[in-house]
Length: 134
Image (cartoon, rainbow, N blue to C red; front, side, top):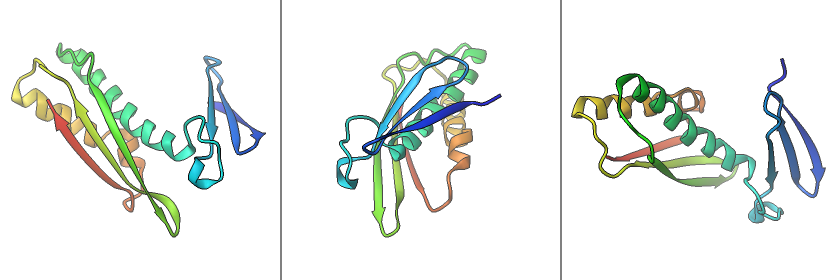
């Protein structure tokens, strides 16, 4: 079964539809690349995929272990290179105030984030700098 479909709308904008749910996602080229910057850019979505994958895989483990990570958040900075134009670095800060977990559980959560499927799928040339604040 198809996972998603994407249609080029013109004006450097795309519309992707998730087949199963019907949810729609719009992308725009960023202003610094001739776009309007009115929505996530494709490279923003790569960073979004990384941060959401980290949180999701941590959430799967945390639910099994009885650790509540509700409210955990990420802040992401994307650094682009110009020649070739690509993501050079993704900085992710994961934080949650007052996380109730043992030191071993916190270390496990960190390991899960660093080894989530998206993190493992990114090319080695994309530097991943991850900071934990919990």
